[in-house]
Image (cartoon, rainbow, N blue to C red; front, side):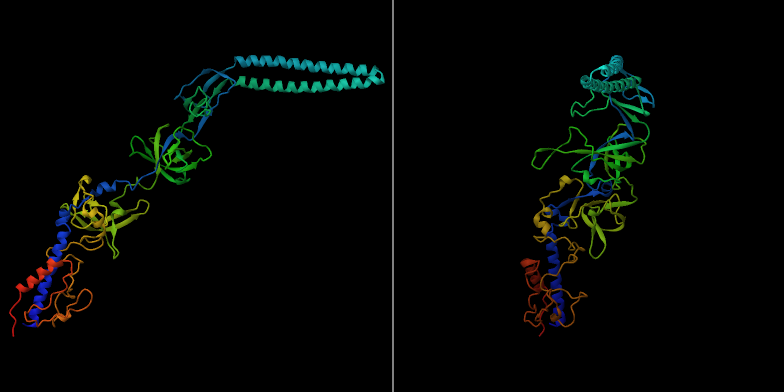
Length: 501
């Protein structure tokens, strides 16, 4: 038999072995799409993923309040005679709010004036007494003069004390008369009566409360509350989004203008649980937001506050979070997408702009909003069955098991090329051990000495054997195993021609 015939036979045998190896690999992989081993992957529609948040947003509670408010403190020494307004009333500057009962104060003033008159009389009597003592001292003997002088000095001291009492009483009367002139308390600002508190203190915290609070009309601000564990995450000048608690699609933009760490908020919700499970008390502090627009906000409305990371901006086209996109080392990017036949495939996509704050890429081609994709996994491979219901996924299947993720049991690890055209070796895979076709796919003229093994050496196959079959076509330790070796050998014997002498 000529060397050329033997070469053709060897090539045919190698191709049969390669095809058998590829088929065995495909069967070990679970058949078509991994259906045989139960691998399934959950896919979501691109349009739904575009509307999802990038992660957990820290949210804080807030209250819409006016830029200015006026707290009216009640005089503890007075009682209220009449209140002219009620909660929710709109008032102007100068509008009477309430009136103190001044009848007792008027009686006090009358009594104080009587006391003042008595003090004045005492002073006048003391001056007259001093004049008399001076006259008597002039006529007294030298021995008695010292006694008169001492008595005169004592009376002068009494006058000074009386004069001090007189001045104090006059000041007290003036203060009470001033209060009498302000029996009616009028509003200092135009606004709305927010609250009227009869008790004067919070029944839970004991904190002193204003008797009446008037909120100014005009532009609003939002007052938020944050605890000491999270206060580090805020800073003045930070952009925020204020969101309605009723309709989360309704939002307003604002800027943090003040974080008040000097005035602690007192309430009964300052309790959190530590890692040990014990209840701890956390301090809370207010922060204030200046709004870009207050249209649609209601005074006293409760809202939610979150950091502005661009989540409310409407983007044109398709934008995906970068975690769904795989960028290859040699360039190019792809996503794992449903191929339209309930099987997963690598779908090449072209990337546009990148939003660093959101961690999103614009997809300019390769994907539509109607497509379904999944999150990349280390053991994911093309052909896996796709499902729209996450409950259908068996997370104990080989792909999700430890073996599947490490590429054991014949499964290819992530990064290796899988699949391939029907009837060919999977792309990127190797010939079974024993031979690799040289570049060009043809055996060079000259026989088996030019057939390279995967370790770079050449096979010294003897083409002049008596049975015409030559040496075994490679080692039988390749991926096909013993079964593939037997298959290749049998194929070689069937194709063996007569040996020419």
